[in-house]
Image 1 (cartoon, protein in one colour):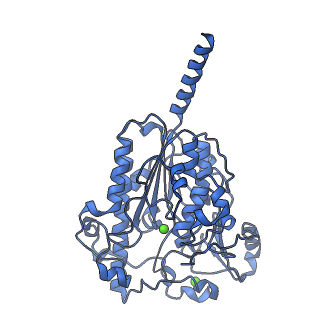
Image 2: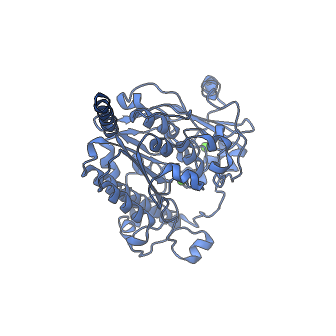
Image 3: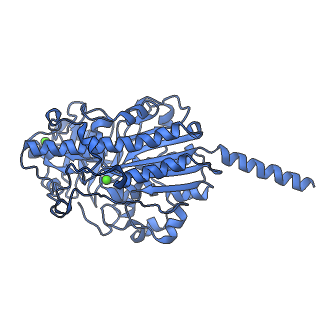
Length: 453
Ligand SMILES: [Ca+2]
Ligand SMILES: [Ca+2]
């Protein structure tokens, strides 16, 4: 009898402790740069994320592990930097090709093993997972909904002109369907704590979204990017130019077309803001609001013509810097901005600590919990890599880039926020280069297959 009572007490306490664990809402957007999130472009409209930022710690100096979709996500879900796995590029099939990633427990897998209900929808890994791994990651089906479409029309898809206003109904956008699925999940009862991951496809191309988001922007108000400088490429190493506009699909014929593309990017960013916003609003109106951590991040930044370049795949601020914010209910620093140079690779160990999970796999990042408690703390520089020997290191003030042939760039963000002046050759900065150079890996894992662009 005594044993039975003990067993009941034990079961009840295990159940209670499982109940106390916080839920996690993990929101990913694709190719969203800093324009609206850090208010560097005032015209862009992001009402929902602006509201969310008031209740979260906003990381103003967040950097991706790799400036392109698949490897950036592999780094976040594994907690491992690309130079340890070889997953540097899109198309590298990281979860089937890297021995290290095959062994690594992913973030959702860790949550599931720790007793969480795991739910995933939309663009999450952007890479093939085996059936067995899908099983280990997520409880729900289907996990991937949709794709990049809808495209403006067949001609646009073939010619690679991935933009255009079309009167598509909301119902055909994968982001609408997936956000609806997440909303439905948040309105249900759950016995276990949950890890809900939602990955949106926008503002990534094709720049299609419900027309009302285009209608929010008047062409007369659109300006060329503040960070554009037509002579900007004169002081960058030759090897850096290999990364420029690899697809050549964005070559605006004139300033008018350039502005139209920017308007399209703004519209798709505002669409993503709305999609994220209605999920967060549902959470805030649910019984889970007080016990759910919200993580918001973009997989990479985005050029809209800065450095004569479109899209990502560079080691400059425009591609390496990503929006990121974390809301832990009750944290006193919520609403503050943190300028410490953090990495999205830090998200895995951060959630391990915040949710008090048993973490099986070793990860590279560092828990951001100390910064959530004190945004002013000193922090080590953040690393972004893009292939063997291609690395970028960001601290609070400088960005240092070194390429595989040893050529370098150094930018002083205090005086040069758009990285126009490469000061690497100046005598006075040699010590800064040496200091930041220590964070560049001595050894880079061999590149898995894939392409640099
Ligand atoms: Ca992306
Ligand atoms: Ca320059």
